[in-house]
Length: 92
Ligand SMILES: [Zn+2]
Image 1: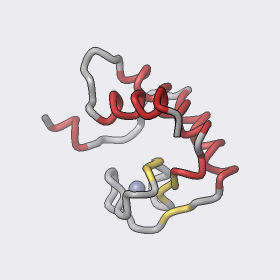
Image 2 (image 1 turned 45 degrees about the vertical axis):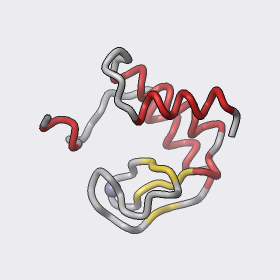
Image 3 (image 1 turned 90 degrees about the vertical axis):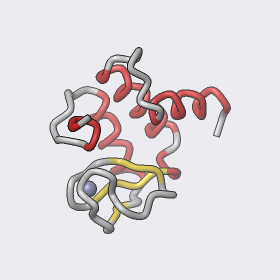
């Protein structure tokens, strides 16, 4: 994975408060779009996570879809919508 993309991902995962949430989602979807082979989508809630993650961080599901075409479609949707689910960060 190119270094620029890795840096983008790190920024997103550090949940940098200087980056607006919608912008974070766009960055993340950009990375997923370019590297669908590195990600999978939760079959329960459709959230996208890195393949190194074996339990969904959103719903704790453990069944994932690795179809690259579907991951790309999800990434495009993700980058164009506001957050629709409650995540751990919302309780901080
Ligand atoms: Zn899930």
